[in-house]
Image 1 (tube, one colour):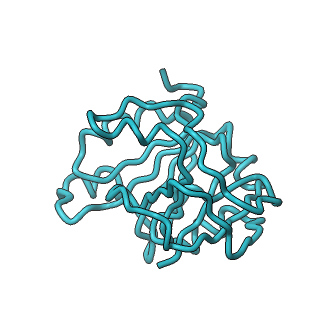
Image 2 (cartoon, helix red, strand yellow):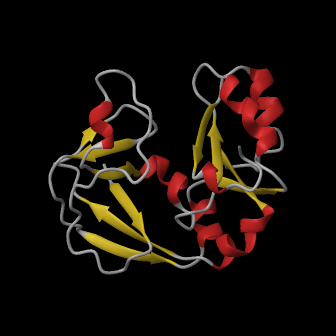
Length: 179
């Protein structure tokens, strides 16, 4: 299994556990997830982080129990060969097209799975085994079989969380239309 961490910083020699910048409400017993950790994502879910760090985005894909009606409504027109769809606001399109990010590969040994969309955490420092500059983010999304859709606003996509699809929203606080 390959694990990655994405960063704007090209010079990370060691990933040190740090608390999250914006603590989230966690279910009882999971408050520790706001504490000092090193975060990683598995290769199958890396499309969640193939964006400039602060870019608000929603990424969706089917689950085994996804209803055909939800697939038709939200994933209708998905290009052949694609398995996920990512939405960004038009205000971010140029930054995504011109952006670049560093993909650090991390050893899987110290990480534990959160059983949630490929996310893993380590409670100890982790040394990267490789770093690659991704200079064409739309191409990286296509390589991960994710179709990019540019929309005027992410707000009309709120009902996705009531659907039978998997929906991940990242940096939504930065979306012009998200309250």
